[in-house]
Image: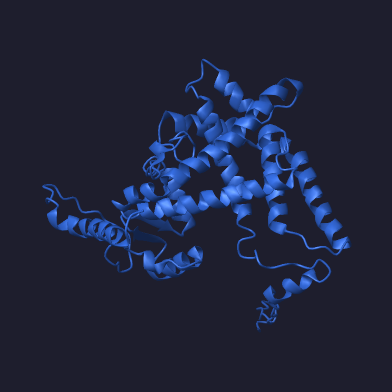
Length: 351
């Protein structure tokens, strides 16, 4: 075990190097001035992080109201633009989409099992363009989403029947677990024509796994904001990130093998069938491998499940009695105030 004094000395030395680095930096010969959007006053090291509160959208709305629809923020060493105008967003995503297509690399992604194989973290290039084209034309097309309407309706009916059954029995119900099951089963039926969380322990395992991955990802990204501290973040949380990815890999590999065993017994193609077809196509413009398959499924999984896993976070200690359930929502409601609106009558020339 490292003594406390040694650990503190290591941290202080690391931070000192970070603080003194600008003084030893050689001035660049060519200095280009960037015409950046308006920006609030920043603090050393942290930049504009102190402006961001627990409700991120409220903090950004407050800043945009004061500084305009296009706002420049510096979060540690990371620079970003905040766009709160529909016309500006349209210009960025359509007119100048190639200029904004590149994205920063995810912290220590090269050391993780999937690396940059996922669509979310892949750099702009052949792989990213191929997966995007596949999503737009096949995987997430309107036709494919329409095919999943029956499955989504069935899962929603199961969820509502479960809530109704608990209400009749006057039992408490863990809504976070049920919403997790609803989202997971809908996602997996869309992707692989199978339900994933029929067992309660499996739902809880997935929920804990998503929660852990969110925590590790947040800490890793926070370390990445402070430049040299990204190495310290990997030293502290890198192994946890690898372990979480391997746990996901075990689940995804199991579902993938189950899907391959029954793929010939179905008539309708699901998302996994389309991915496997691209995987087996030797003439494809970009050759995807099994890692790409599982990385894409992980992106889909986290996007569909990650938000529902957070439902119970704020209300983990709240129990809802189904008999008096409305009582917990009434304080959140605000009465509507109806005000008379004066109209102009052109025929009487009066108001």
